[in-house]
Image (cartoon, rainbow, N blue to C red; front, side):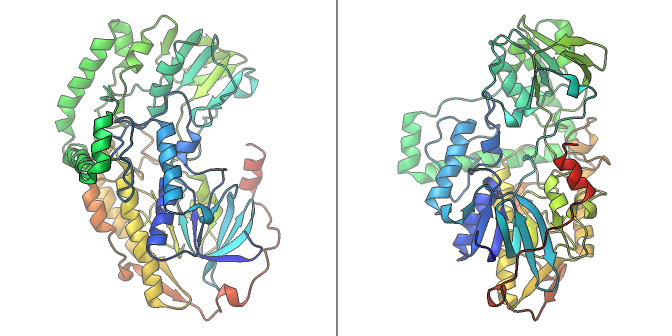
Length: 518
């Protein structure tokens, strides 16, 4: 970045959301933008998560952009390496490389009320932008619980999203903490090689068979030569999931049949009644994300695997102690404990018009207008914002809907003309969130009897969208200016009067704690 660089749009992150935003901006004729990426390459969560067995639980042809179909998917459910290669391909085909700024982690974004633009500090320099599109994603910052005594552990410790490929697990005693989507993929991969594997399980997941297979050469040839066949395949996959939504959002009791099938899946794979009891959930299927695996249950029945049906409570040297008193001696700990979803760290780095951070504005729970904009943070929007997650379909569908909203947002700024900003009205944000939370009350995520990462510290579901992707597409098709305050200024454009880089800022107590590793 140049010393006083100013851009029309700054995109934060280069995963599906960030690259999708970049493509959409180019298609809108906007080339004055940058994509700020903290790492050294594109891919987002599909770059960071490279653990053994990492793969997507959404079919390949649905887990890709509609504007960038891939006829060469090798499997019906693709692995991490293929998804990351797809994102690299998107960056090349749509000529995004000149816009990418790697190793440029955003450390602070501050709204300048006088100049109506964002002042952005990064690890590689300073710039300003009229609009910020935050596409950091909810699965970007790993969460490791504060386990008493973890500092006394003398072995190896890492999170599944920061897999240490230099550490050889073969012959080691390994503890897997957590039973989420990552854990059920990791366990079958490492079980044959480790001396002993101890799985600490607070809550068992519902696991269904993974109907995965290689996509044949003739199929790929057909999709290359006749693109409409791939479109039809994608449409069928989408349609099936749209029809399933009502069971999750309006009639959870209809999931009873699926639950019986899931129990049968456990019974077929696990013959030991004691182990089977440990692995059988006591909540309605769908309350937590339904996981897919053919190898997870068989791996847990192997002689070198112990399932501790209790969460990890403390660590004493090389001994891990569960809440029920079970003890295990281990050489390595792998945390599959999820991410900061409802308390995203990026929110601490966004300072709005009234001087508050986004984290402070969201201290009682995340909320935004149509999953995109927040009151008091003009010309700022997020991709995969509050209540835009899905429990049964492809997030790419939601991302593309938000890209429509982003495109119209920037378009409206152009129509209004001059130095202008749009700030979501608090009443509009509250009204939207009231409607969302009213619909959420009868969903399986709120009534299914579980505690999931969909819920924030107050027990409010600020993560999932309680409807179909079609409904969300309609709600984000265009910006309603009636939901925004229009801000104007007489200040000249930044190109007319370059500003100096900001003076060193006094760090907050929270920032100092983060730097100190607290």
